[in-house]
Length: 205
Image (cartoon, rainbow, N blue to C red):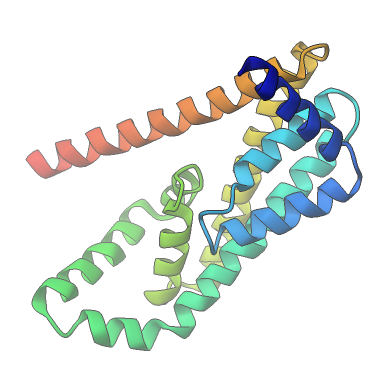
């Protein structure tokens, strides 16, 4: 099993060494904001590991990841705005639906940009929130500003996670990838736990 894993990561390392991998990172990061089944964070981490090994530029990896995430977030926001009238009419047909929609708007107004930043690290969360911002007609200028911040923080974190792993284990790519992926997964779990605890405390008040 270890031999298979090692072979897989070696193949991944060879594939990510091509300059075309910058374009792959950008495209996948864009798609991930609309279709959360696309593993953009994985690709950005891989780019960081490869940059740590000296085959890619860490600055370009961060730029491509952040640019793709920004474009994808705005695409999701646009789709939400286009469907706004239909969604609002459908949700407000019942009292429960109207309350849920009002709660979404309240959360966005209360937590604002910080919500956009933390949602970037939650699989599927970024898509739901950016769509919700569009559906609830949040100001375009406000959304773009925070989308830039969120995408930049996310891309920098994921890239550097892989970059540090690639630098530290330049002679063992398998270990570099595994440490980077474990770190990314652990941070996501911590964010989810903190979010769950905060929600529970707020509900109990």
